[in-house]
Length: 92
Ligand code: SF4
Image 1 (cartoon, rainbow, N blue to C red):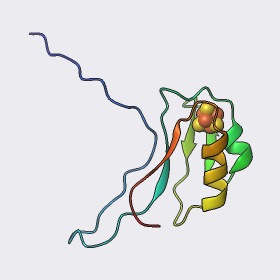
Image 2 (image 1 turned 90 degrees about the vertical axis):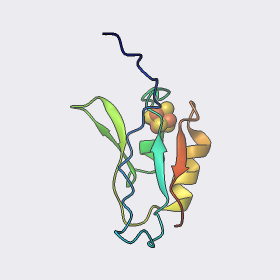
Image 3 (image 1 turned 180 degrees about the vertical axis):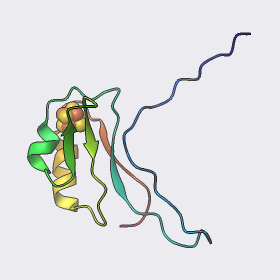
Image 4 (image 1 turned 120 degrees about the horizontal axis):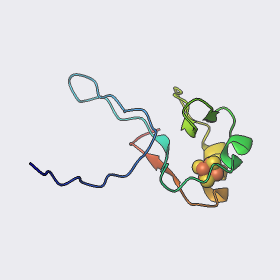
């Protein structure tokens, strides 16, 4: 039997977990569209506390932090040659 495969946007962000009562605000976090990333490492140079190259997996990943440095991430977003970094989630 044949099943159609739906295309999905590939990202390497962790999942934002809601509290059991769903009242806790979602954390704002950066996300990389791995389908567009060319591994130029520019984001790692600009925000090394946020982005890291994972050599065993072969892609740039977003580290899980309590809070993300807004200015560093904004700089990485602005300078990403593939426009593949975005903010996801909600509140800071
Ligand atoms: S700056 Fe953009 S294209 Fe370059 S490694 Fe980071 S996410 Fe990928």
